[in-house]
Image 1: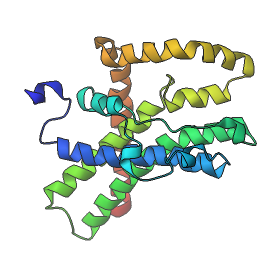
Image 2: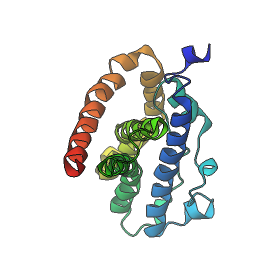
Image 3: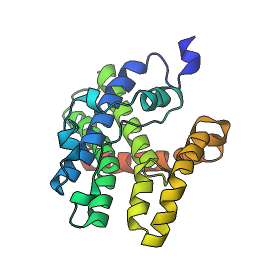
Image 4: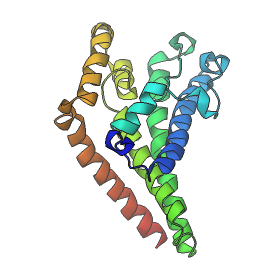
Length: 218
């Protein structure tokens, strides 16, 4: 029965859970770390500058990624008033999360092909499945979080890059944008909006990285 409600099979769940813990934790830690480096201690003071997964997991976001294939962690609090250059720091803090997921995916490719080049790990089904899940899930989160919808990082980046008059309008739109985004994600409309992006961008990105690292190691 549970299989019917999950986008992943029961056999995949152990790998999904491990990959999620790593992906969400490092994603949010990256936000907190960059914000702290730019002078904002808010996340650190709230215990979010940590690699402890329980401080970063969002129950709804975790459930949605198991059911629909994409979700989110608990957002790191950021106080822009601490930044000397709020726009630049804001962009870098926002982009740090998705880039951390891309880094994890690339590191997983490096580990896999590095082991292959030494003749290690080829017969380990667990390792192969785990690294495949680390790659696919982190590439999904990389692309997903760059979508220009609140509360995702892509929206925050656009908000910091936008001129002041447009930013004010975006702030007014934000509460409705989050609702629109949820409708697009959890209804059949995702077949015409979100899914086409994933069905094109993620496979091409995965193929490109695979070709690059296989050529580098093999």
